[in-house]
Length: 275
Length: 177
Picture 1 (cartoon, helix red, strand yellow):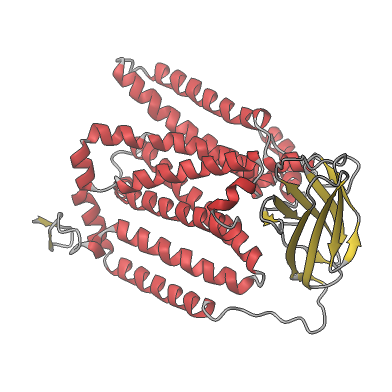
Picture 2 (tube, chains in turn blue, brown; picture 1 turned 90 degrees about the vertical axis):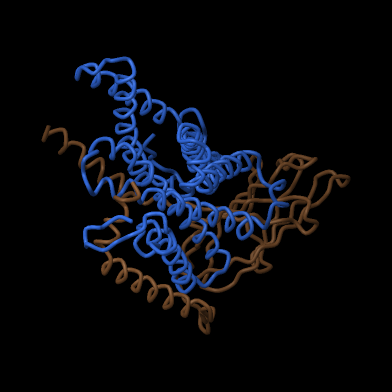
């Protein structure tokens, strides 16, 4: 039994009894209610069933990415402000955010596959680039699901923390798959403003991750001097940002191919992209 | 630094203000369910009555490639023919929906060589923006309002519960950590 700040006794392992004291429960329940509420609000706003399915799929996809981004951001931030109580609270809550991201990604996948595309049987009728983009999205969802399924204290204990951590590094691979998935078939990534926002958000994440990685490397090789740490951080940051910057020039998005399909025909969307 | 920021400001404003319509994707199948086409309708798959929309069908790979040498494309909107052309695997047309309502889109791909199969796609497009047609009615499903009210109410309850227990919630996260 442990005494909390309010002076009342709490049992840390009585999970169900303490459900209402667990911030992860609020994140999960809140996400479920927001997802349901938005689905209903969207239905009231959109008459056309097909358009409703498209918007719902886009909404859940966006929410899944936002949650995943938040979960990824908390990790390096907690290293930066390790003594902060708020950061400790967020680090604890992160698991709830991650599981919510997995749920939203599943909802996105279900709506896209069965609502928008008409089931698994229809995959064969899609253009090949579309299929590759979908497979990347499915892979990312599976990664999130594996991470969510192994996000219980008992599983961590069973697997040992080292193995569990190793498994959760899959999240980075999943992150790359998401970036490619969105770039290939994301609808609103066509907008310059969205491209800028996504680029800035990823650059911030890369900066923080670079700092975390540099600190881990410096610690391992006993190079704790500040100038070394800064140099390694900047090098990793530039490498990651450069790789991200190269994505548009290396991989043509599906919508871009469609745009440039027909010169001289009805003018398709011409964008001033921010590549 | 200020000069650089001031120089970048118009560029950023231009980027954000510039209209750039996007479109999502709907998979439609031909009558025999052997061939698929991803349909894009601009802008945002939600056409505006009175404004031109681009209708783009990306036809998937088939035994005989859909090219302008092999096939002839014919697009019908509510039975009326619309100019359509084939470019690569795309069938492209520009059409202005006259008013809000439901429109039948029919795409006929006729082979130049009769031994090749003909394809027929059918899709119902709803137009709910722009010029309103007389007698147009919008229906909202019965499940949506109660679900919306229910989820908002439960969200508020959850918020109140969390606020009331905020000290215990903070303490619990530290114990578990």
